[in-house]
Length: 95
Image 1 (tube, rainbow, N blue to C red):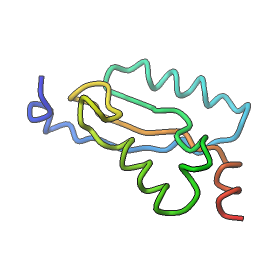
Image 2: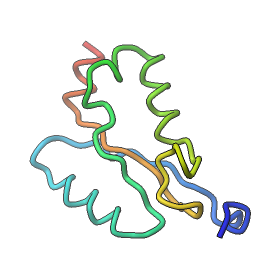
Image 3: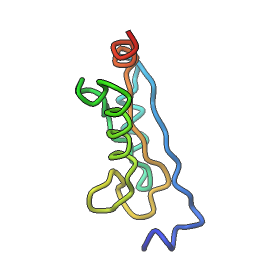
Image 4: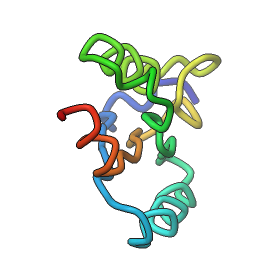
């Protein structure tokens, strides 16, 4: 099946904004159990990925790239692709 065959199923993008010990890992596992949903974990865990707006946008571009071989999607008919961002990672960047 190709992306063209799934054209009627647009790809949705999401972010799980959360804090530690809140059950977000379980929630992400639940999302990933669906064959057409791909949650890519804490993509901003590394400080260099959130140093500035440019590095954040670059990281998000890599996650939301739907290229089957190099992107974050599980398959060509991914219905949703996203990531998890911890509150403390946002606060570090803003302050």
